[in-house]
Amino acid sequence: MFTRVLIRDMPDFDRVGMKYFFKNSKIDEDPDTIIFAKMECIFELNFITQNIDIIHKFDPPLLSQPDYFVSNPEQRRFVIASTDDGIWVDLDQDREVDLDRLYKIRNILDIIYDTETKEFYMLSNRRYGKIGFFLVKFKADDPKKYNYMTMI
Image 1: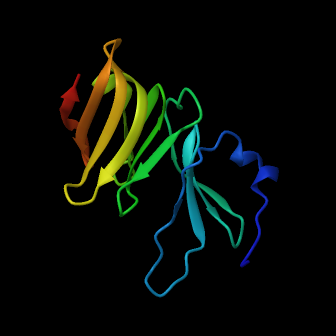
Image 2: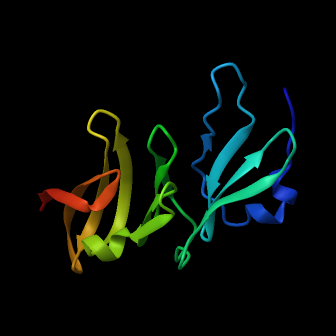
């Protein structure tokens, strides 16, 4: 064991999603930071110093604890979602887009990132209140450039 951090004793870890990433480190350096998401923000924990820094604060926050947290390889664009709420974040331009409102979806079931096409895929079971199988693909750099892959 390298180090031990008791996050259960840290109030910043209330309602944090279960998905997380090691922050990209320089080639000659060991990783020392983990990126997390919760209802209010994306934040990072340096597990050596135990410092916590907010990367991006959501406006408005998610409706519930995030179930999904996906990043592009550069860790500059993220999709954070719970079953009924989804947000796309661009750290370079300090922008966010409410995805469930943009795509008129609910019951988000999964999100993945395709490194070859540089696109996110989001799967949901409701669109305009109708039950179905809805797979939307959108550009990592602009979620307003999207296509529905399936609408059953």
